[in-house]
Picture 1 (cartoon, rainbow, N blue to C red):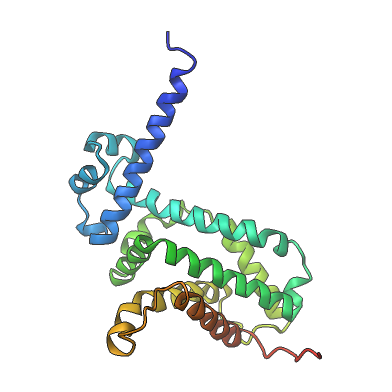
Picture 2: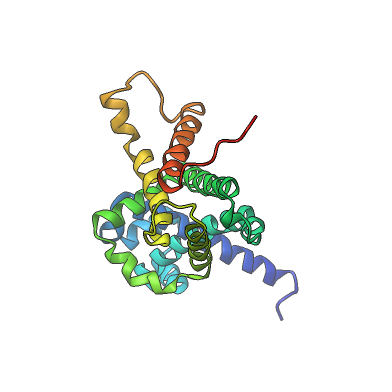
Length: 230
């Protein structure tokens, strides 16, 4: 009979193996895209055999889906932890300065997550280059509740006259990700053509770029804010 302390250890070992495979999958998918990634390479990178990968994830698409869902859960958890208390306040979507603060937080969360997860950035670039064909196969597995909450929030802000456009709220939100992704992935090019002596990935340069992107997005999406009297 299995001892009571052996099962938790087995579960920990299984979770450790699963996370190692996810990490290896993320690395290989980032380097080669979905089509170019090979299960043999993922197995070698993770240190586990192919049969265990198939046991946990069924096939390559199943592994890919779990890698993407892990990133989605992490980013959503960050947004929920920071924004949930704010979104519960129904007055925020009708107050220009409060809505601006929420918009700034959204940009910060997305920008910082991408900076800290360069492999996920590369996976997004592969998806873009391939017309989101792989993502289309797994999109039904994602929870849309949080997206619907943000969409409703943006619609309220639009009804309150805070947004310049009635363009689809979810696309407006997605474009924040696109702008952050575009800047960060173009940094090597910026370095080559204009700023060879400045490290655009330094601890000083990244916050400065983030502040510029915040201002760019806020002024592009929102109406001009009333001036506050000193």
